[in-house]
Amino acid sequence: MRMRFGPRAALVATAGVLALSFVNIPTASAAPGVVIQENGSQFKQTRDPQGGQCYPGLGADTAIANRTGGTILLFPDGNCQTKILNPLGPGEFRPDEHVGSFLALD
Image (tube, rainbow, N blue to C red; front, side, top):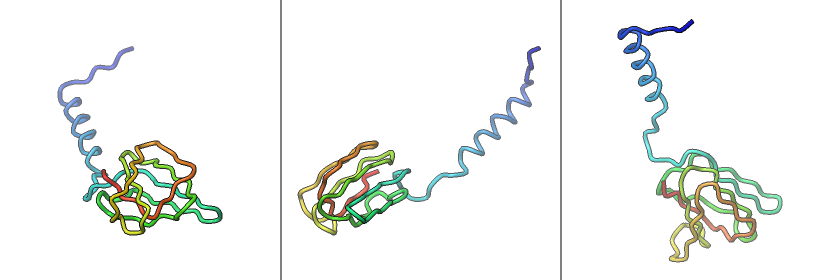
């Protein structure tokens, strides 16, 4: 048995889907997901990092995973100011980095 939707039912269903798609629109640009850092006994997670905001790292010998939908830049200094930066794309992992800070691009 096959169900058929009339034009009105199709319009109501479409309006409902569109309304639900706007429920979780972020007000600021964020890279949805989490950045995970681990350095010996220290462990840090940064959820949904905001684009353009500098976040502290754990320093030398840090394992870092970018589980966001955007690219982050790794810096050796603690305030995202040096000209030495290292991009880490979505889904990438590095087992041994010097992470003084990181900046979310997306």
